[in-house]
Amino acid sequence: MGLDDWESANPNAYVKFWINVLRTLESPLVWFRETIVEPNRTPYPYYHQKFARVPTIDQCYDDDSLCKFEADEQFKRDKKVDSAILQILRDRWSKCVLYQGHDREVCDPLKKIYHDAEVAWFSKYGDMGYHQTVETAYMKQKHRMVWERRHGPIGSGVNPDWKPVQPTTSD
Amino acid sequence: MFIHPLFFPDLKTSSIKLGGHGGHFEIKPSQWQWTKFKDFVHFYVMVGAVPCLAVMFLSNIYVGPATLTEVPEGYTPQHWEYHKHPITRFFAKYLHQSPQEVYEKKMARLYEKDELQKMRTLTMKLDELMRSRNDTQVYYYRPISTTHFRQREEEAEQLRDQLGGSHAP
Image (cartoon, rainbow over all chains, first blue to last red; front, top):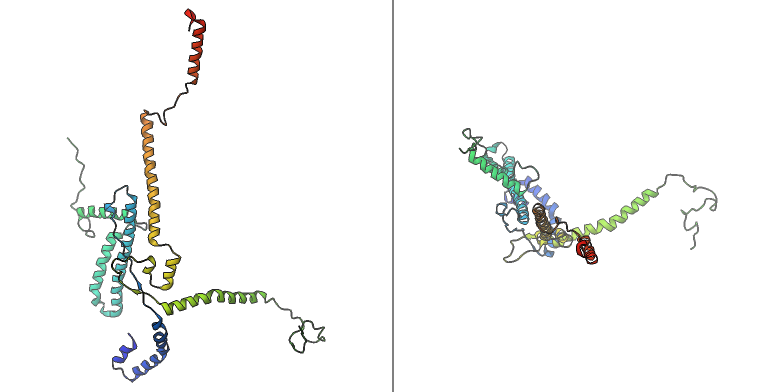
């Protein structure tokens, strides 16, 4: 929000006075920027790095340690990306709450989006301790799928009707 | 060089020479370390901080940050082209290894270790099989020296030749 926005909002005399004061204060900086900095710069690009997808851990052979290593590195990158997404969603919600103050119910949709994303993040990366590898995540996913087959979606509690399968004894 | 009290009124080497009034040797704690410290501060600011600040200033004014761009089709950027600031790019280009290079080196080391481990497993398996079956002329077959048997056989031969007949062994 620059001074131009204030000026275009038809300000009163007091605000105009302060606009002029600030313009005077920033005029040397503006002059420096426009006459020295900008004519001397040549714009040049930088890029976001894109990583090629490699086979995930479920596609690796058991004795292929290089495939496992690459899957692990990819898992770490994916975790960083997912955490950054979660951070952005949280920031959106908290900035909304900060701005709305007492009307924070306005932000409830953002809150729901954030909480859903948080649950999804935690069901993928949570409860695995600090030293996570892609193999622990894979095993966790397997255990979760077994649990869901027995008890329904996670967070719903244990299914009371479920009984462990007894080993069948032949004759 | 001509030094005379007339031209250098503050220069007093000895009160005796100048007539014996005023200018006594003042006894006070040494200022040497403090003076030396100021010298060092001056020196290192000039040698270290001033060039660093100059480089930072000039690169920020005349080069400035890069602008984020989509990667052009069919172009693989160099690893320093993923950084925004010129000084960071300089460090990435000339001081740091390429992350991809580090990654591939690590994979090569891992490959070697993995091959070694596989060979070791195979060796242990072979070893175990040979130990249990014991049917090959390798580690667990102890060769017998036949030297003495052959000597005994030769001696017996000689004896047979010498004695002959019914006394032969």
